[in-house]
Length: 225
Image (tube, rainbow, N blue to C red; front, side, top):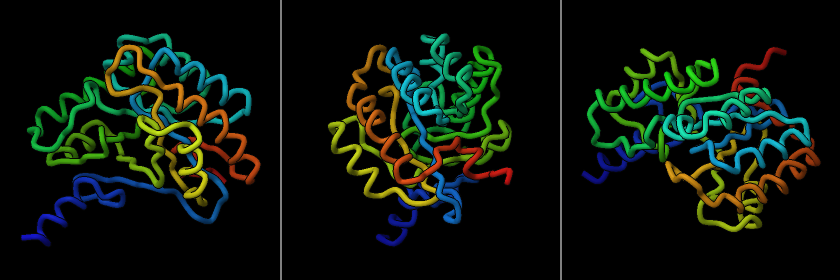
Protein backbone atom coordinates (compact mmCIF):
# COMPACT_ATOMS: atom_id res chain seq x y z
CA UNK A 1 0.00 0.00 0.00
CA UNK A 2 2.76 2.43 0.98
CA UNK A 3 4.70 1.64 -2.20
CA UNK A 4 1.61 2.25 -4.30
CA UNK A 5 0.94 5.58 -2.63
CA UNK A 6 4.54 6.66 -3.11
CA UNK A 7 4.45 5.70 -6.78
CA UNK A 8 1.24 7.65 -7.30
CA UNK A 9 2.65 10.69 -5.52
CA UNK A 10 5.70 10.59 -7.78
CA UNK A 11 3.53 10.24 -10.89
CA UNK A 12 1.50 13.29 -9.86
CA UNK A 13 4.23 15.59 -8.52
CA UNK A 14 7.60 14.11 -9.48
CA UNK A 15 9.48 16.62 -11.55
CA UNK A 16 10.81 13.90 -13.86
CA UNK A 17 7.46 12.11 -14.16
CA UNK A 18 5.84 11.78 -17.58
CA UNK A 19 3.15 9.33 -16.45
CA UNK A 20 0.30 11.73 -17.20
CA UNK A 21 1.78 13.25 -20.33
CA UNK A 22 5.04 14.23 -22.05
CA UNK A 23 7.03 16.41 -19.68
CA UNK A 24 10.54 17.78 -19.18
CA UNK A 25 12.20 19.30 -16.15
CA UNK A 26 15.65 20.37 -17.35
CA UNK A 27 17.69 20.97 -20.45
CA UNK A 28 21.04 19.51 -21.52
CA UNK A 29 23.91 19.68 -19.08
CA UNK A 30 26.38 20.19 -21.90
CA UNK A 31 25.72 23.92 -22.34
CA UNK A 32 26.10 26.66 -19.74
CA UNK A 33 22.55 27.88 -20.20
CA UNK A 34 19.42 28.05 -18.05
CA UNK A 35 15.78 29.00 -18.57
CA UNK A 36 14.15 31.53 -16.27
CA UNK A 37 10.39 30.96 -16.07
CA UNK A 38 7.50 32.79 -14.39
CA UNK A 39 4.12 31.33 -13.41
CA UNK A 40 0.71 32.74 -12.39
CA UNK A 41 0.90 36.09 -14.19
CA UNK A 42 0.35 38.53 -15.48
CA UNK A 43 0.07 40.98 -12.60
CA UNK A 44 0.34 44.73 -12.33
CA UNK A 45 4.02 44.33 -11.45
CA UNK A 46 4.99 42.04 -14.33
CA UNK A 47 6.29 45.10 -16.24
CA UNK A 48 8.86 45.62 -13.47
CA UNK A 49 10.26 42.17 -14.25
CA UNK A 50 10.19 42.94 -17.96
CA UNK A 51 12.25 46.06 -17.31
CA UNK A 52 14.92 44.06 -15.45
CA UNK A 53 15.11 41.46 -18.21
CA UNK A 54 15.33 44.17 -20.87
CA UNK A 55 18.10 45.95 -18.97
CA UNK A 56 20.21 42.80 -19.17
CA UNK A 57 19.09 41.76 -22.64
CA UNK A 58 17.81 38.32 -21.61
CA UNK A 59 14.72 36.30 -22.50
CA UNK A 60 12.43 34.28 -20.26
CA UNK A 61 9.35 32.10 -20.52
CA UNK A 62 6.09 33.22 -18.90
CA UNK A 63 3.30 30.78 -18.01
CA UNK A 64 0.25 33.01 -17.46
CA UNK A 65 -3.19 31.96 -16.28
CA UNK A 66 -5.89 32.66 -18.84
CA UNK A 67 -8.10 34.46 -16.32
CA UNK A 68 -5.26 36.83 -15.49
CA UNK A 69 -4.63 37.42 -19.19
CA UNK A 70 -8.29 38.41 -19.57
CA UNK A 71 -7.93 40.88 -16.70
CA UNK A 72 -4.61 42.37 -17.89
CA UNK A 73 -4.34 41.65 -21.62
CA UNK A 74 -2.05 44.62 -22.24
CA UNK A 75 0.55 43.21 -19.84
CA UNK A 76 0.61 39.85 -21.61
CA UNK A 77 0.89 41.69 -24.91
CA UNK A 78 3.89 43.53 -23.49
CA UNK A 79 5.47 40.19 -22.52
CA UNK A 80 5.03 38.87 -26.05
CA UNK A 81 6.06 42.16 -27.60
CA UNK A 82 9.35 42.11 -25.67
CA UNK A 83 10.22 38.79 -27.30
CA UNK A 84 9.61 36.52 -24.33
CA UNK A 85 8.06 33.09 -24.71
CA UNK A 86 4.53 32.43 -23.49
CA UNK A 87 3.28 29.09 -22.21
CA UNK A 88 -0.02 27.83 -20.81
CA UNK A 89 -0.58 27.63 -17.04
CA UNK A 90 -4.31 26.77 -17.20
CA UNK A 91 -7.19 29.24 -17.13
CA UNK A 92 -8.30 29.17 -13.48
CA UNK A 93 -5.23 27.65 -11.76
CA UNK A 94 -7.10 24.60 -10.43
CA UNK A 95 -5.66 21.80 -8.35
CA UNK A 96 -6.21 19.13 -10.97
CA UNK A 97 -6.02 16.01 -8.82
CA UNK A 98 -9.43 14.34 -8.58
CA UNK A 99 -10.80 16.60 -11.32
CA UNK A 100 -12.46 14.85 -14.29
CA UNK A 101 -10.53 14.78 -17.58
CA UNK A 102 -13.21 16.90 -19.27
CA UNK A 103 -12.70 19.71 -16.76
CA UNK A 104 -8.92 19.60 -17.12
CA UNK A 105 -9.02 19.76 -20.91
CA UNK A 106 -11.63 22.53 -20.97
CA UNK A 107 -9.61 24.66 -18.57
CA UNK A 108 -6.39 24.18 -20.51
CA UNK A 109 -8.18 24.86 -23.81
CA UNK A 110 -9.75 28.06 -22.49
CA UNK A 111 -6.33 29.40 -21.49
CA UNK A 112 -4.92 28.45 -24.88
CA UNK A 113 -7.74 30.33 -26.61
CA UNK A 114 -7.47 33.44 -24.45
CA UNK A 115 -3.71 33.71 -24.88
CA UNK A 116 -4.04 33.30 -28.65
CA UNK A 117 -6.82 35.89 -28.84
CA UNK A 118 -4.91 38.55 -26.93
CA UNK A 119 -1.35 37.96 -28.14
CA UNK A 120 -1.50 35.98 -31.38
CA UNK A 121 0.67 33.36 -29.66
CA UNK A 122 -0.38 29.71 -29.61
CA UNK A 123 1.60 28.25 -26.67
CA UNK A 124 3.53 25.04 -27.14
CA UNK A 125 4.42 24.46 -23.48
CA UNK A 126 2.18 23.72 -20.50
CA UNK A 127 2.99 23.91 -16.81
CA UNK A 128 0.40 22.33 -14.54
CA UNK A 129 -0.80 24.45 -11.60
CA UNK A 130 1.05 23.44 -8.44
CA UNK A 131 3.02 21.02 -10.62
CA UNK A 132 0.16 18.52 -10.21
CA UNK A 133 -0.50 16.24 -13.18
CA UNK A 134 -3.59 14.01 -13.41
CA UNK A 135 -5.62 11.61 -15.53
CA UNK A 136 -6.75 13.25 -18.76
CA UNK A 137 -3.80 15.60 -19.02
CA UNK A 138 -2.02 13.44 -21.59
CA UNK A 139 -5.06 13.53 -23.87
CA UNK A 140 -5.50 17.28 -23.37
CA UNK A 141 -1.85 17.97 -24.12
CA UNK A 142 -2.09 15.86 -27.26
CA UNK A 143 -5.20 17.62 -28.52
CA UNK A 144 -3.79 21.07 -27.76
CA UNK A 145 -0.29 20.21 -29.01
CA UNK A 146 1.30 21.06 -25.66
CA UNK A 147 4.34 19.56 -23.97
CA UNK A 148 4.58 19.65 -20.19
CA UNK A 149 7.32 21.55 -18.37
CA UNK A 150 8.23 21.18 -14.71
CA UNK A 151 11.30 22.78 -13.15
CA UNK A 152 14.76 22.01 -11.87
CA UNK A 153 14.69 24.62 -9.10
CA UNK A 154 11.68 26.47 -7.66
CA UNK A 155 12.14 29.67 -5.71
CA UNK A 156 9.24 29.43 -3.21
CA UNK A 157 8.98 33.14 -3.89
CA UNK A 158 5.40 33.32 -2.65
CA UNK A 159 6.61 32.98 0.96
CA UNK A 160 10.37 33.70 1.06
CA UNK A 161 12.17 37.02 1.24
CA UNK A 162 14.21 38.13 -1.76
CA UNK A 163 17.56 37.19 -0.23
CA UNK A 164 16.38 33.69 0.60
CA UNK A 165 14.97 33.23 -2.90
CA UNK A 166 18.27 34.22 -4.50
CA UNK A 167 20.28 32.05 -2.11
CA UNK A 168 18.07 29.04 -2.82
CA UNK A 169 18.18 29.37 -6.59
CA UNK A 170 21.82 30.39 -6.92
CA UNK A 171 22.84 27.47 -4.74
CA UNK A 172 21.00 24.91 -6.86
CA UNK A 173 21.49 26.21 -10.40
CA UNK A 174 23.42 24.08 -12.88
CA UNK A 175 23.80 23.70 -16.64
CA UNK A 176 20.40 23.16 -18.26
CA UNK A 177 18.38 24.16 -15.21
CA UNK A 178 14.80 25.39 -15.56
CA UNK A 179 14.21 27.99 -12.84
CA UNK A 180 10.66 28.65 -11.62
CA UNK A 181 9.49 31.95 -10.12
CA UNK A 182 6.09 33.67 -10.10
CA UNK A 183 5.02 37.05 -11.49
CA UNK A 184 1.55 36.57 -10.00
CA UNK A 185 -0.08 34.73 -7.12
CA UNK A 186 -2.67 32.35 -8.58
CA UNK A 187 -5.69 34.51 -9.57
CA UNK A 188 -5.27 37.37 -7.09
CA UNK A 189 -6.06 40.72 -8.67
CA UNK A 190 -3.24 42.80 -7.17
CA UNK A 191 -0.74 40.39 -5.61
CA UNK A 192 2.35 41.54 -3.78
CA UNK A 193 5.27 40.19 -5.81
CA UNK A 194 7.84 42.60 -4.45
CA UNK A 195 10.07 39.79 -3.16
CA UNK A 196 10.06 38.18 -6.61
CA UNK A 197 10.91 41.43 -8.37
CA UNK A 198 13.80 42.10 -6.02
CA UNK A 199 15.02 38.51 -6.34
CA UNK A 200 15.03 38.83 -10.14
CA UNK A 201 16.92 42.12 -9.87
CA UNK A 202 19.67 40.33 -7.94
CA UNK A 203 19.54 36.90 -9.58
CA UNK A 204 19.82 37.84 -13.25
CA UNK A 205 23.18 39.65 -13.01
CA UNK A 206 24.45 36.97 -10.64
CA UNK A 207 23.74 34.25 -13.20
CA UNK A 208 25.26 36.32 -15.99
CA UNK A 209 28.38 36.89 -13.88
CA UNK A 210 28.65 33.11 -13.58
CA UNK A 211 28.65 32.94 -17.39
CA UNK A 212 25.21 31.38 -17.71
CA UNK A 213 23.21 32.24 -20.80
CA UNK A 214 19.56 32.94 -19.98
CA UNK A 215 17.23 31.45 -22.60
CA UNK A 216 13.60 30.63 -23.18
CA UNK A 217 12.44 27.08 -22.55
CA UNK A 218 12.35 26.44 -26.30
CA UNK A 219 15.87 27.77 -26.77
CA UNK A 220 17.16 25.69 -23.87
CA UNK A 221 15.49 22.43 -24.92
CA UNK A 222 15.67 22.87 -28.70
CA UNK A 223 18.93 24.75 -29.40
CA UNK A 224 19.45 25.64 -33.04
CA UNK A 225 23.24 25.29 -32.86
